Length: 256
Length: 367
Image (cartoon, rainbow over all chains, first blue to last red; front, side, top):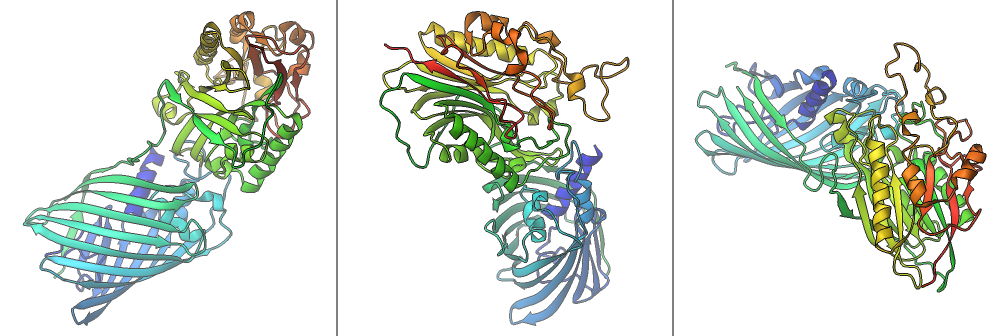
């Protein structure tokens, strides 16, 4: 049971699909070039938590998941350039604990216990450019790269060859990893909105080098912003070690 | 303004829905087998009177490496070099024995444990075979246990001559496992096909890999279904060569309990309070009559009298990596006659697998 819980937590972490935004009030601007205002705190249990150090500097992490795989990021907004807002985001990712937990015998063993997981750190940097082409809409394009630091050699057979997992850990086997994507958020009717994003992961160092993820999520947010219901999908395509594969992951969430 | 939003997820449901295949694949009772072809066709003789048939459980190219699942080992995911080295050893032996028809068990197609190498295609392309039919024994996109990950394993019939009517026949699943384990576990199968030898229209091959570790009557059911399939071909006037890894001992075996031989360090069997009392898959005592009907109806490559007279000569398996063969699990049967005394249990092939191949000559009938 503990292993299953850990697995689910890992999936929570890796998907990051609960970082929802409110395009109209700009409350939830994760994934855009906008930052939360100074001293504003957003706490999510299974989603990202963010804190505004200043009006243009934001600190973010994943609260519970960080116990397993720390992800700490700083986003700096560089202001408006015409109708575009530009920001850069810099983060560190420490999945060692998670990978060691799933390196075990029996059920829950995603990685063979014959391997030793060294200390692993990934450092990611990305540029985000957002604009509001229409009312109640935010369109963001981003590009970034991630490189990894390891205390020792990581055996190539420790990969977790699953969608969502594989591209987020791939930089420890082939680096750097480049990511490019767009994110489109829009309020469509009163409390309803949607998010549509496309993410590309590129690994120049290998032939298994490309992963595409597309998410489409419908959101319902109560008037008082106290209840949020999300339903959508995540479509993944990638060049895995076993060959090209695509997967469809349905997602349902009720948050309040 | 400081705004604090605390979200408490009530329901989070994430389901991996694989558009083409589920996490672990189930099968219909009868399905078409998959056909494999050599990249380059190798010419065959226009006429043939005698064919050599061989069965070999090739242990997914793991050789004698102490794999965790069957040899008290701690290895799970083998390297590409290890697999290719063993595959080369296997094809060297195949090219040496030169069977015309090869029944292989435990051939991996796209498994993490064997470096995702399509072993069947590799063997066809590195031997003289032109055709193969394949039926899955185990197909799971991801097994979340012991780091196994993706696993695709099966049984295949290889031939120089064209194959047709390839069928995968599902054998009953084990009933001594919990549902979750059973969902991800192997699904034992037979694969059958027609071999288009020159001038023959009703020649069949049947390849089976019966359950190795079932502690209930599942393995017995597998053997019964194997026999029924042979009966069906025989009744229809067909000629067959059939065999594989039946995972049980021949009638008349002196030793029928291998719990102590197969015991891993830290394990204990046969003592008061031991639970289980016998090691799964190592106690053949309740099975001693399970092959009697098969032997009474059809001709084994090794006659019972020969086996009883010199059992060690026909041993074809051991679970111990450094040990010589200590039991017989691999069989060949026909409803006509083998060439007398032509059977060879290739006990000198000790590096390639935890099973020795068994070959025999078959004189094709004239019509």
